[in-house]
Length: 145
Image (cartoon, rainbow, N blue to C red; front, side, top):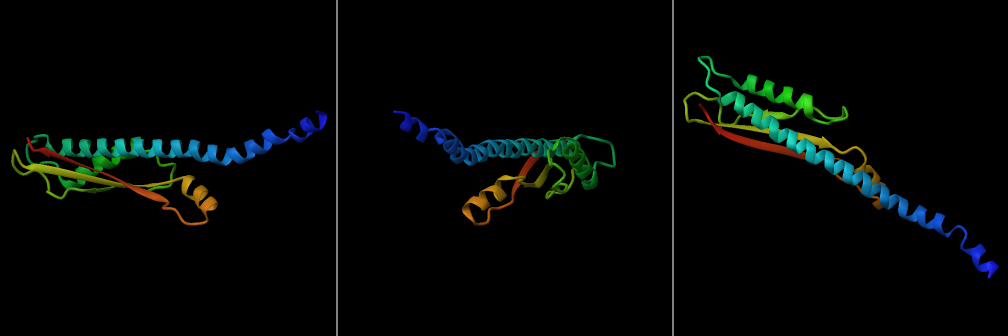
């Protein structure tokens, strides 16, 4: 009976060593994708802020594309979680700015989220390449006042 116990002494350490990498991937995967979803919400809100700034009635001159970009970039710089690895979002106003009441203004914000750890970690295990970034974008359309 004593020899059976001796043989089992390091089994839990070996099992832990086998399960640990999988556990680490799951935990960091949850963190990474939580950050992606948070940044998606921020990009969506930034496009709404830019569109709202562009549609609000003002006496001439109305807000131009540069001012809409400025509103979106200020919002993103305040709220995006980037860890210093990414650039400013791309802001486009495909329909132009508001000229008449009732015109539609569209603001598109695109942002490239760079993963921190997961693609490199998975590529090491599967000996391949994984995409290191994901495109996050949002479009908001509003009617001009």
